[in-house]
Amino acid sequence: MSKRKGLVAFLIILIVSALWQTGCGKPSSHLTTTTTTSTSVTTTVTFSSTTSTIIRDGKTFLMQNVDHTGIRIGNIYTSLALDRVDEEKAHISYYHRVNEDLKYATGKVGSWEVEVVDSSGDVGLYTSIAVDSNNQVHISYYAPCHSALAYASGESNSWTITTVDDPMTADVGYYSSLALDSNNKSHICYYDWDNMNLKYATNKTGTWDIEIVDGSGTGVGKYCSIAIDNEDKVHISYYDEGGKNLKYAYGEAGSWQKKETIDITEVGEYTSIAIDNNNRPHISYYDRAKGDLKHAYQATVDTWFRTKVDEFGDVGQFSSIALDNNNRPHISYYDVTNSSLKYAYYDGTSWEPLTLDDGTDVGQDTSIAIDSNNKVHIVYYDVDKNLLKYLVEQ
Image 1 (tube, rainbow, N blue to C red):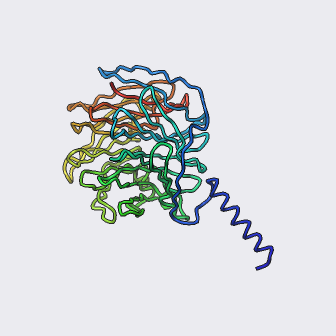
Image 2: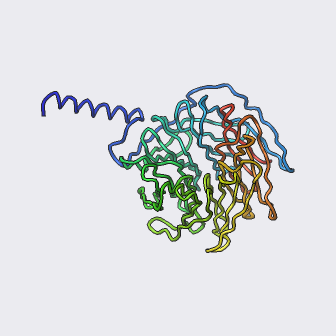
Image 3: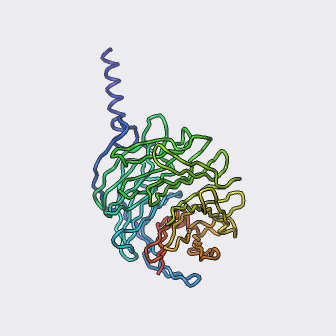
């Protein structure tokens, strides 16, 4: 090799290395792990954090702005989990659009701590958060600059960042959804954009194992949502873009016992799944053909019941579902027609849809959780004011 060629090769290596350090390249190995210490909010923006009271259908909610998310318009990919010790305390993951960071907020109405978890380039889209039995926080997310699925675990100001899946030749990590099993092991479903299939990763063996769950069509796996039942079996709802159908997978790593179509004809976007005490899945999703919010419930192994939850206007995008102590579903979602946040709950007889926030454009990127007292917690995005907002039932 000539000295000139050698110098060029050396410079290329330096450039690639520098790009990775700034978050704009590929790592040299499939799996990388680093420990970082978070800093405080990188940008200070003044916004109102005044608490508002909302009363709907006999239910009272407190609403508060948590953080300003940047002046750019677009998703902030919020996700919500409740503390294992103090259920009034919320844990929220989300994306800061201007700084392109993964952020984390924790606290309750009147007292919030906000920090940056990962700032290694453009990272933090499609976040999903869970809290384990030791009160440790786990977050899965997509890192566009790396075209990879990433994962953070730890607690405030001390995070371990891991690249879970980076196949070098594909863009993976879209629509990530995270759930924890009884041993605090992580399970993540996500979408492989280049190969257009549903993927799954778990660290239950101590290392990350990755596999394709469904590669049967074009665009299979978008809007995936994952949940774990009390036998540690995995349930995934997802959208088949090619067939325009809602699909469902059930099983465990290496053994998917069921992959089936639950609803057809332009349905299945914005899916969210929850498992009841009888290990039966409940799925909320959007019917694009009719502009409705729908709910599917597996009554028996081979029987699904599908119901319209809300059909007033174009409703049902960004749905998120949770179950209360009576196995009754509660769903937060976006009303496109009125640009507002809506919430629907099943009272044992019928569905009751309520508008909770009707600002200029609010209610996208919703995430819902229910505490042991059956109180509802919702986080969502105020597009008009670029705010992360939080609602809690009183």
